[in-house]
Image 1 (cartoon, rainbow, N blue to C red):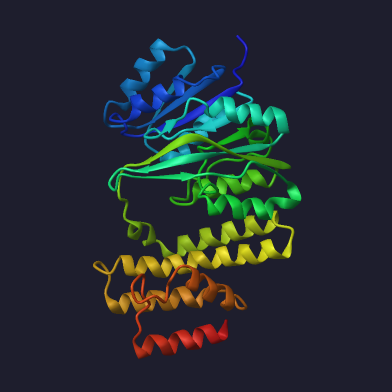
Image 2 (tube, rainbow, N blue to C red):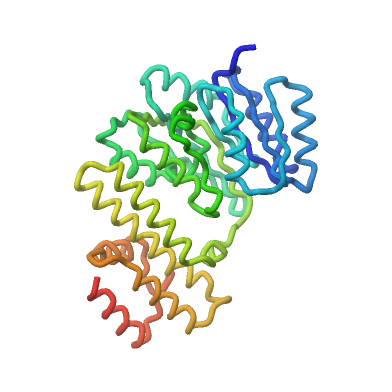
Length: 333
C-alpha cells in the first residue's frame, strides 16, 4: 500500500460536541489522497469512541489513544507516525473547507514552496461575529522573509499551524517539533523554527479554514507565569532576528518584541479584580526593568500602537509614584 500524499493531524481532548463536524469537513475534501491521524489526548468524554467509530468507516483514519499530555505532545506523536509527503493540522473544534488540501497542494506543486499558507475565516461564537483574514497571493523568497513575518502577523497567521502546508522531510531532517514546555505561543515557535529551513513560502487569498472560537478565554490566565512569557518573547525575538535581512524588517522585529512587554502590562489591568494595586505596580516595574537597554523607543512605539497610555483601555496607573518610576526606567532605556 503506497504512502498518502498528505498527513492531516488532529489533536483531540474532550471535543465530542464538535468533533463529528470537524471530521466530516476533513473527509469531504476534494483532494482525497490523505491519511487522517486522530490523537485522543486522554479525553474523558466520548471523543475517543467517536474517533474509533470514524476509523471503522474509513481506512484513511488512524487513531492513537494516549494519556493526557497537552496539544503539543499530541501533535508530536502524530508527527512521528505521519507517512505523508506533506503535513497539515486541524483543531478538533474547527473545520477545514473542502478546498483546503486541493488549494495548498496545487500551489506547492506550481511554486515549489516549502510552506504554503492559506487565508481563513474566523467565527467568534459568543459574539456571533465573523472575520475574514485574507492574505496576499504572493511568493516570498528567503531574502523577503522579513516582509513575510510582517504580512502573516498582520493577518493573525504566524501563530497558528492549521492554515498551512508543511513538508515532512523538513520537519524530520531538522528534528522540528512542538515545545511541550510552552503553554502559549508554541504554535508560533514551531512555525518560526520551520521557517529557519524554508527557502520559499507562498501565501494565497483563497480561504481554506474555518477557525471557530467557542469560549471567551480569559487572557489573565495566560499572565500567571510572567517570567515564562518574557522567556517566550525572547525565543520569538531571536527566531525572528535570524530570518530577517533588511533594516526595516529588523525594526519591526524589535517592535514586535516590545509588544510582548506591552501585552504583559495590559494583562495586569485585565486582572484588576484578582490583583491588588500594589502587586500590579510592582509587577509592572519588574516588566519594565527587564526591557533591554536601547529598546525604549520601541517600547514607547508599542505602547502607542496598543493604546497602553489611553485612559479608556489597559491604563497604566497614573499615580505620581508610577510616573516617577516610568520616567526613571524609560530614561534608562
